[in-house]
Image (cartoon, rainbow, N blue to C red):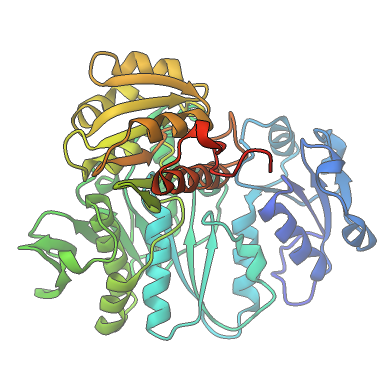
Length: 478
């Protein structure tokens, strides 16, 4: 265990063997730390495991019993494991510290770095992935070595093979923040906080408190970047230097929108950075994301030209308001990452009245679908519902917009293709989790994109379903 902090235990139990659990197990084994790995799924889901077993890993599949914790000094949690898990309760009863995979990886990175790492952490209900990637893009354009890690898709543990100092730009979910203990970011960003994951938290206050943990270990020389336009985020407590961002003018310390310009204000000076119309991604929510990225980048002393180029050239992320197909004047937009009510509401904000055919539904996260009604009634001509939450969505929107229950993505896309006309947009922004029908939001988005491209291609060819195409646009019989 050479090079590791002195308090590192000789064995770590890792609960959850998806991307982060696997990456952490490999990083620990490479440093001489023994691992026990547990997961509710059967061993057959993870084969082959021979290389890890040869290095001494112990496996406990199919819902690990408490012997999984034998000899472990820490229990490491993958992001999807709830704190209410019996194993977590058992660890706490044994006084075994429960830590996020991210926390352990951060401790390793800090202990082994050949130079000073800089840490940017981003959380929030919506916009955190785009903001995280946008900050990373700006820093790369400034010539910095950057690692884009965390909840955005690549576990922090996967970056531990290199020891050179870098800028780590990390997305953190509320689940990860629950089990952070020492992590201290140089810059912490909260994009917004609206009700979400109320199937896991007892109240909105509990969920918001988890988000606020991103500031817990910061000190006066660090930066806390918060959304002044979001009541809950703006009220968060921090010892760090507060830097604000807002779509309204007048911010004295931070980034704001003034007379059509993104402006940076600090220490009594105001500097226009670029026109709002030059921002790479459209929509009011992306202006917020751009302002947050601008503020975080300025906190790190980034050159203005790199900030400008990053804000104007950023390509965006898959599954976030992604144009995936066009045909017959109809645009098909994949916002599968819109997994809660607030995200879906923002996604339809920028569209003209009655120009959207909206696909909603999936697994309910105890969202208030009635909050969608005013904006959806304005922007959407038709709503197609899918998944487990269809009936609840329909009750909330009944009488405000035309509704059609489709059940599956295939049927929703077929119906949208049949109903959409020139100048309209078919938008998947489901306001729900994906887990009733898909493994994750990425799988759902990819399926929608495949179906949408098929529908658009049929439109371009002047074909309909009866003339030889299946729901994905492939000839029947192939």
